[in-house]
Image (tube, rainbow, N blue to C red; front, side, top):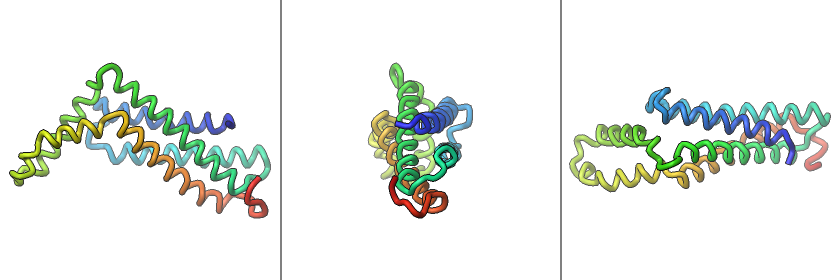
Amino acid sequence: MSKYYLIFGGIAGLLSATLEYLLFNGTLGFDKVAGVLFGKILAMLGCIVFAVILIKKMKGTISFMRTSFSGLMIALVCAAVSGIGYSYMHYPDGSFFDEAKAYTLDMWKEQNKDKPEELARIEEVKEQIDANYSLKHHTMLELGMFLVIGVVATTFLAGIIADRKSLAG
């Protein structure tokens, strides 16, 4: 594996984990989930662009396949590093997320305050919120999100920056 994948994927993953920490710590406020998600995506896309441009500068040319593979590998490393950061937040018992879970439940109650049939499902909703903050759910969601965005972004980037004479190589 190229050191560029590890370096840029690690940087994007650390930025992602830091943004999540600031969100769930309460520093940013729990209502900033969309901004944190956008920041994580932007960090990964920026790292992919810089890595591909650096690889092209170092090697002189870069093929479509190499560009796509680079984005995929950076997305995988980013998801792994971000997942490790999220798992550290879960250590030892997951109580780090209690405030975020309470905020999510309060928002759900506020949205459904006029619907008594929905409010009767409160225990089911609590279990669903707990499952949404689980390590398994987060890891699968992040991996899928980063892979899809990484592949799509590098496909567009490959169309712009890749050497048109060589599909692979």
